[in-house]
Amino acid sequence: MEEAFRQKSQGHAEVPPKPGIHLRKDAFIHAMPAYLSKINAAGVKWVSDFPENPARGGGHAFLALGILNNSSTGFPICIMDCIWLTARRTGAATALAAKYLAREDSKVLGIRGCGVQGRSHLEALVEICQNKEEVKAYDINKANEEKYVQEMAKKHELKITSAGSPKRAVQGCDIVVTSGPILKKPEPLIVKSWFRDGGLACPLDFNSYWKTEATHSMDKFCTDDREQLA
Image 1 (tube, rainbow, N blue to C red):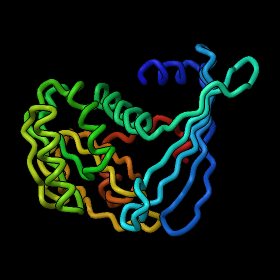
Image 2: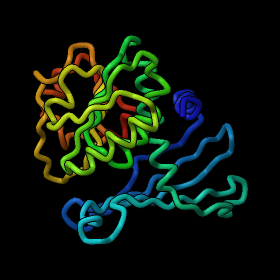
Image 3: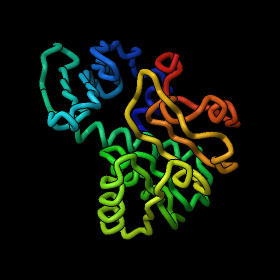
């Protein structure tokens, strides 16, 4: 991920803003094309998020299909499932941000959303945060939260506590990751008074859980792609 961002900053990448279709309520499908000229890699990810799928017995909410093309002929050379890859790539991007933006003495991590991204982000962040002491986890689904605490504590040999509320998953944390569903009409909860001075906030879900005042209170606002953000 670090090398990919470096190539992008040096002008060796073509990553147009992703077009998308929005089928109903909070469901969407996006096309994410990219080309890295330095290594002749070209491809696209066709990714969907249907938050109601699990409740309706439809399996994963988040699905992704990747196609890699030969950059000389255009022929598809790989078609693959990208659920695993998406989880790892997103977690790695946040960990990379933490490497350069978080305080070196960051010790307490807050995870809001204990699904696939909550797991992959913790997996990536523990590689970056060498002084970690505690992880506070929260999920709107209490069973998911408890399962996350048990499984992740055992896997990473960390002190992971059940926050029990969105507020406790943010307060006193040096790095906070929010990874709930991306909502068309969000009802954000996180206010600026919850957030520690000098902390790093990583909102995977855009403005779904951070109130505008909380976002505006930040001293620095960073994005990996200004055109896409706009």
